[in-house]
Amino acid sequence: MMKIKRILVSFLILITIWFLYNNTLDITAFVIGIVLSLLTSIIFCQSCNVFNEFKFTPLAFLYSVKFVFIFLIELIKSNLDVAIRVLTPSLPINPGIVEVKTKLTSKMARMLLANSITLTPGTLTVEIIDDSLFIHWIDVKDDEVEVATKEIVSKFENCLIKIYD
Image (cartoon, rainbow, N blue to C red; front, side, top):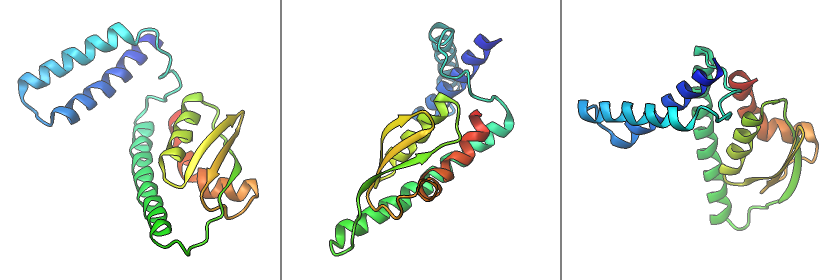
């Protein structure tokens, strides 16, 4: 059963990427995409365990979409913040490394959390140790773990818990 789940999830991801990349609903491209995605999934994803922790439910799918929107909003906000700091050198910055705690138990969810933090400008995940992430933050507002966790992690974590844990 786990094997079928891995193949199905990888197939859905590959076919979505195929359609986004080709940007057409032509029947030939449709059939080629389905065949290539299915073959690739069957050949390469029988033993991959990256999707084992993913909850394959409609609710998890909805939270995945919500996660993408939250990430895009945070990405835009942090890009604007960093751009303002670059264009206005008089703005004070307070760089430092802060520890944040996560409630996520899934390795994949922690990886997505760390990458989401790293991809937003102004933050960089330096290390993950157990349930702690060490983040380089361009403007440390507070050294307290709870405050930093609420500021950096909680937006992403709420969705990832519903998807993976």
